[in-house]
Image (cartoon, rainbow, N blue to C red; front, side, top):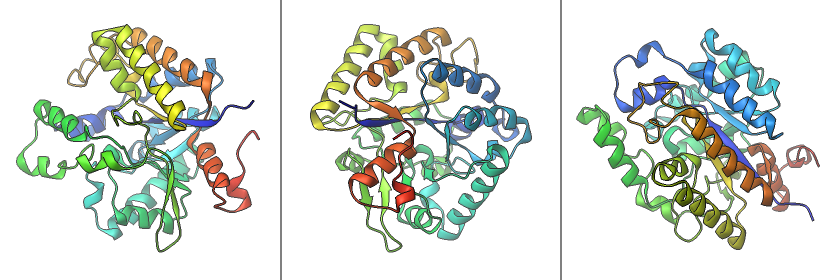
Length: 324
């Protein structure tokens, strides 16, 4: 019996983007760890024969010094997605015209750096708005995956503000970072936005069924600081509940899941960045290996096309799922 298709993605937030959102000086020079983290997660995935989606920030793709690292992504068979150009979690405040410009710049930069044209989008900090959805349909994207169905977004934002160096105006811009309490009532299973320009598929970042608490890897690494047993028990419980609820997980990774204090000492404000990289990568391996026992883990585009096929949406080309 074939396993159901699930998905794995990585938001390639660079060092400067964390510094920018946190309000740290020096981000304007675009400090980067891509030359370290990209080969590391590529090797990790190759060891497991896994292909995923990597959501790349346009500003990074626009800088030639990042091109060697970024080209490794499609060269190893991974999908390249759009993660905005400026990586500003207040994208929902942009005008329609500014959103369209943001997308155009990102698409041009990704095409130049990687040779890939994105068909999927994830908003920075899960930032989303009706205008973002409108632009996605107008630019013929196949899917969005910017929703994060959890009630804990405001708590995550509060913790972030406590450690950040932000003035009142900057806090206002970031006032919806990680979403509001209303995010918790959003569906966990994929669905279509009914838009004027046609339906757009939404694949939420999976949270634990019923409780709607986060289960992506950064949270598991935080729990691992308290207890490895606690982290793995939490993950097994999440997988069991996903199977019981019929939810094919869309699991989210971040670069800091593969980087530790031995790689970078400037991001200590981030949970689990006081842990060495080897311990983090070992746990990520255990997490992914458990997931692949129950699901056929694919890039987001394959997950999206499988959902569209099951619901009778899309053209025959769009409905083709790689490897089937």
